[in-house]
Amino acid sequence: MTTALTIDIDVARGRIASGEKLTDVAAGLGLPWQRLSKALRGKARGGPAPSAAHPNPETEIADGANEPPRPIREVPRQALTERLRPRRLADVAGQETAVALLRAFAASPYPAAFVLAGDTGTGKTSAAVALAGELGCDVAAGEYGGVHVVASGEQTADNVREALDRLTYSSWSGSGWKVLIVNEADRMCRPAETIWLDRLESIPAKSVIIFTTNEPERLAPRFMDRCTVLQFESRADVVKLEAMRFIASIWKRETGRDLPECEAAALFDSCVNDGQFSFRRAVVRLQRTLLRSNGKAGN
Ligand SMILES: Nc1ncnc2c1ncn2[C@@H]1O[C@H](COP(=O)(O)OP(=O)(O)OP(=O)(O)O)[C@@H](O)[C@H]1O
Ligand SMILES: [Mg+2]
Image (cartoon, rainbow, N blue to C red; front, side, top):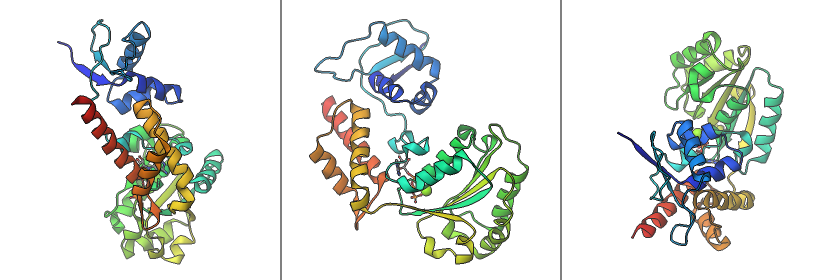
């Protein structure tokens, strides 16, 4: 019996052409890379030509079958926010200052702590994960690849101690660098903060600790002074140009078509709240718009 998976083959090809690895594209689609590779080769050997009715023919990949790909409708495999989570620092949009500093750090790292501060949906957690990747951690392997996380709401003294021990004693694969990401650091309890004050003065070898926060003012100055603080930008007037590019590039990548500037501007405006723009909100709204247009196409 064969299992059928559906993807937009031209979109997959476009993503690979724009520099993404075949294995990453395949993982994002929930496919073994061998199957994606085979599908791409099949298309190159003479899959269906684009038509007016199907400007972006989508392709069925049948396990072990040799039949040529057939155009069918897309089945989303992953929320767009996850599929488009920046994998490299260069993919974090609209944060030039923070990204430049993190890239310089990745080129010549040392044990350090960072606070990534800024509004929700500006790329703080994504930048932390991307930095881990650039330090040579195997992000997909999680702790085994050197990436440790203390989730928001779990920042008790015991959890912080345990995370620091794991950082110090765990075995790892990859470059040997380890990254501990502590999300929503402003929610930590007082005893946890006390532990950090002590331990941030002697960060383990080849380790980087990254705190993210929406409310840096809630963190004690003594804590902040032990970290390099990077502000993530959300002011709509500052990020507008970059955000419009971001919106247009996702649309192009997902549909193969250009998004008229007035529509990009309308989408941008709808993602501004109180003068602050959220990149996450933009991706979520783009996904909703894509679903709607797919729905109309199917009527
Ligand atoms: N600067 C950005 N560049 C590209 N994509 C972004 C950016 N910021 C957010 N996104 C999109 O939004 C999703 C969520 O981003 P992320 O988790 O990094 O935000 P955050 O700043 O950590 O938000 P929060 O404060 O709510 O934790 C990402 O997977 C990505 O799709
Ligand atoms: Mg976050």
